[in-house]
Image (cartoon, rainbow, N blue to C red; front, side, top):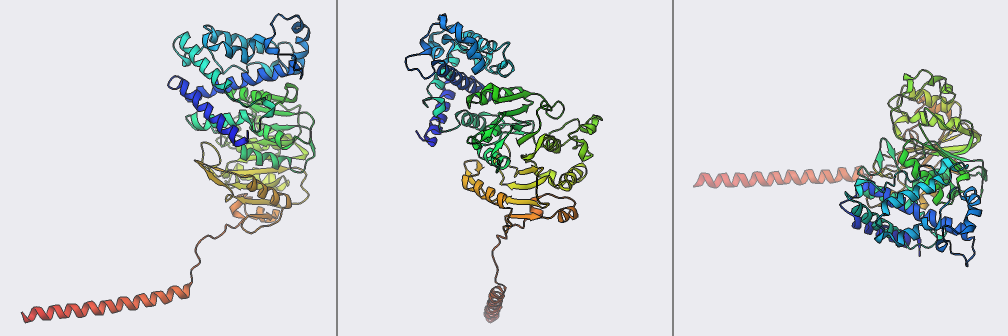
Length: 519
């Protein structure tokens, strides 16, 4: 099955599940149940595959929970996978009895609790804890009676079971990521937008990851300070599968639901618990990874212009992340707070690629002072303007800011990629050829008329440290070329015709008036 066929089948099946529960479950809640069921299925299949160890004679799903061999290998399995699932708790065995199980909702809740509790006391405990928190099988949203809740849970489980993609490792697409994007684009009441957060489409994530990892043959670790569902980290993994990532993937997320999704997403992409560290909390006020920095690669799409405490907390100006700039980001616009945080966590050899709201590149005040600090210290490698309407929930034409601490030149590169897109349904999309075009000029740093220009520090300084791409890259004039000589000739002809018409009309009027006098 090709990637496009898999994607079409996935979406068709999700719509079918929706039809089975339509009218009962809100779209956003429905997303949580489908994603939870997807996770439950694939974590079960992954664990069963591990327990069978490639031995075709072993069918873990058919074993009895009381099998004497299980107790002997349970601890080793938890240390390896981070959790333990008994045969009876596997997705396949639960689905087989779902339609007739009168205790399905409470039974599922007990299984989820057992899986999470299996990690208690082990290094994976914090990575597993709360993974199923948003999959509330006893919620009244599923129905007012136990029977109704069980019926709809069974419909969701059977629908997910019907996704016929073989083993998870054999998928040609990002199954979980595609399901996530499909669900938020079709069911979220605000198109995936919440409190300044915009989910990053996979094609944009790919560009960001390639920018951050460009020409690095190995990195110590990859970090996203506002990681959302983890899509940027996972795109970085895809771009770097053939190279060395020494310590894995790190991220922090303030939203509890999205934090759970990020951890699920790691597991579902075969990133084991000991190769990722996703933490819940406020990155700006309570950064978790101070002891882990610096990072060789940072990817981020932080919330646009979100409010923060800023200058109302006088201690923040002394924070090692913000102090070097000498000023804090405005309280109403925390964009540069995230930028300075990322810069502080960046290693001397690495890059940070950050999605930014365009306004921060030209506004005055504190934001101008921060831009001056970034440019004067030669941290800004590139500013890339993208096409509008690439993100779910916003038509804004965002920029990507690329930071580096090891620049060997003092110029700053500006790339106008606003014309690179294909329109697909309601959103624009970056094709692979568009990404390649951006990466080629990013690598070469060559000036390309109407597309890219490298600008000396002195020019930027004289322009009030304005970092807007359109201030340096002249837009292509798409207006029709007008031949003035030809236009003037046509005007003369037109005027002459008008004069003649007037004479003809005057003659007709005289003739009519003369006939009137005769009568």
